[in-house]
Length: 132
Image 1 (cartoon, helix red, strand yellow):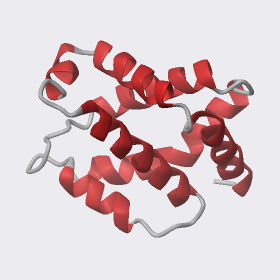
Image 2 (cartoon, one colour; image 1 turned 60 degrees about the horizontal axis):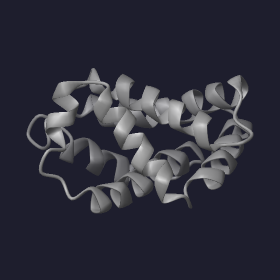
Image 3 (cartoon, one colour; image 1 turned 60 degrees about the vertical axis):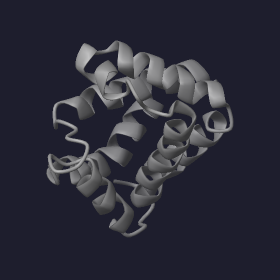
Image 4 (cartoon, one colour; image 1 turned 180 degrees about the vertical axis):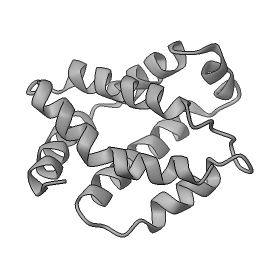
């Protein structure tokens, strides 16, 4: 993964992450992708959850920039079958929802931005998913 990807992603996220509506729309989209996923968030404090998401995406971005994987390994543990039981196949839906929401909010988003996001954060997502 080139540094160019992580720069593109860092800047793209910067254009979106100060807008709380970005995170609201992400969860609307993600929860809309499956009844099972919607059920996961039934009793969730969503403002707190959006704050966790903001940090989680940043951890994926920072990991792509060479930060150690300590925080992602902790996310993997909390999301595993002994934690929140986030099934491996749901991560694809999560990434699809993220890319669709980035496309909506990042004024400079295009296909090369989408590819940069995939290349940058898929290794980190895989690390979380592998802990299942």
